[in-house]
Length: 151
Ligand SMILES: [Zn+2]
Ligand SMILES: [Zn+2]
Picture 1: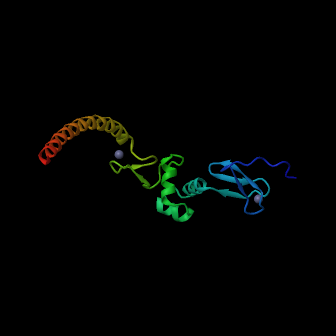
Picture 2: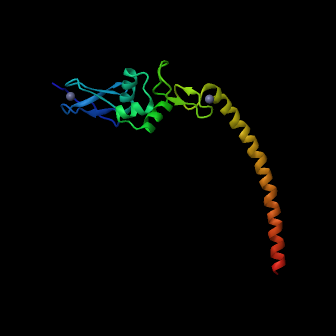
Picture 3: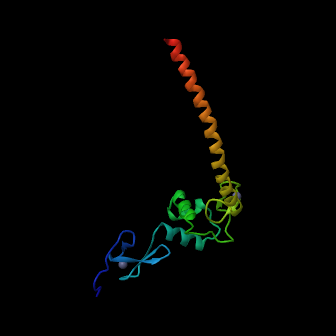
């Protein structure tokens, strides 16, 4: 009764562990078997499902419970595919000021500072390269003298 099978493409289909049929991606990291109704979750689905049930979970708790590595969880969070619920305990910290954040890498304030900082850095790099240019010129003269002395 299965009818014609849909074409598979990487990452979008999994094989059902219960009956061996193809599982369709149902969204939110969930794969569902159309034959027996078995549900499988990918990394994203497992982390998301666990956080929905345990809103106060920390990164290490989620990692232990789901088997998804902390790095992978952080990656998923940084991609902002998962947002920590407002009543969650502290899960991520701003890399600049250490303030608790719900997703991404920096808090909003530091994100602004960071963008400004990048512009300032570009300017100071230009000054630096001028200084190095001078130093290089002096070195060239010095080595020229050395060569002269050797002769
Ligand atoms: Zn199945
Ligand atoms: Zn910050």
